[in-house]
Amino acid sequence: MVAKLEKLIFEYSREGRTSFDLAPAHVPDSVNGSNYPQSMLREGAEGLPKLPQVSENELIRHFTNLSRLNYSVDVGFYPLGSCTMKYNPKINERMASLDGVAGVHPLLPDKHCQGMLEIIYNMEKFLSELLGMKRVTMQPLAGAHGELTGIMMIKKYHESRGETRTKVVVPDSSHGTNPATAAMCGLEIVSIKSDANGFVDLELLQSVMDEGVAAFMLTNPNTLGLFDPNIRKIAEIVHKAGALLYYDGANLNAIMGIARPGDMGFDVTHVNLHKTFSTPHGGGGPGSGPVGVSERLVKFLPEPLVEYDQANNKYYFKGESTDSIGKVAAFYGNFGILVRAYVYILSMGGRGLTECSKNAVLNANYLMEKLKKYYDLKYDRTCMHEFVLSADNLAQYGISALDVAKRLLDLGYHAPTIYFPLIVHEALMIEPTETECKERLDEFVETMIKIAEEAKTNPEILKNSPQFTPVNRLDETRAARMPILRCCACEGCPAPVTKEEKAPKSEATSKRKSAS
View: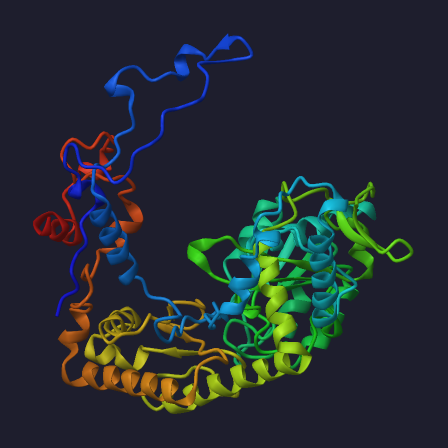
């Protein structure tokens, strides 16, 4: 059965229908005796916003139907590698929704938001302990923002020493944000190949480390899901060259409570709270990317920082260092996300967080062992929280990783991460997290085996998937090169259509037109 294609809200619009009435405006026509600028005033009906005219029941049905098209971790298993789509306990949401939390204004003076400052202060202490770092800033608004903050501090550290270092080294398995962050800071990127085991090639690393290198950016376990056993040696090589070691801690889900980046020799680390600490991924935000630093970088942290006056039992903002890189956000991070992570940490406790990591590693290895008979496994060794299969063995039947992912959509699953990391051809990156039970994992295994068998016996069904979603297989190349960013399906739509959007419509667009 094909899922019903929901119309646009404008397609339900009929002249004269309404779902609400607004009370008469009490806003004066002038402010402080001066009229509003003429350019800001609407003129006649043409100046009014083009809003849909629908009844309340049609409005509710529309948005309810849209919500039913969403896939989330509350609906089913989400094997998206490198993203840690773990279940978010609802107590996190309840606590973050309390009036005293959700209603606090960011410009309140310190004395009126002591509870909020206490949460920020305690979160820093928790994360400092988990990361093995001296101090942590809670300001960054996302993981990539945290990376930017970290590299800015590293850059300023070298400048404070009178050194001009212009290069950042990354492994070829790195996340794309690593070189992008370095480039944003005006630094040159040097990429080195991984060795045959998927780890940092020590000889290559040694060969590129010179007086021009500011930092080596690394995640451990890496994007292959493998923990590098040479991490102490890596830190030694980097530090001997006068550079700093940056930890991409977007995902701590394999080592939380077991190993700490600071103990491995890292100088800076960021952590994505929406991954390891169970806050919503929410369509790209809001996020949070706290950054921890070793002793040598504390004075470069963004300010203000939250301090505690024990004598007066008072929390307060402090920011007066001339070495600080300054604010990286207008306010103090996305506070609601900090609250959710705080509740999660308190709920789990130290022992619970450690068990999370152990179970995440157990689940990943269970899936890997079950599936490696049916897909290629380029690095066949114990993984951490995630692993990377390859669809290379299905190429003889004309099947790619994309085909496998699209078939999964028809069989009721979100697709795993595909074509990343780049060093694995036809990559299928899978991360089960610790929140999935054995029964759900077994169901996923059965589905993946079914797809592998279909590739041999009925490859066309994979090539033509998905068939049971509102929109079938898209022209992804066209969508990337010529995205349609405006509504242009309705007659009389006031939004202008670009030249590119006037081009012949894709299969998906044609399907929408015929359905409406």
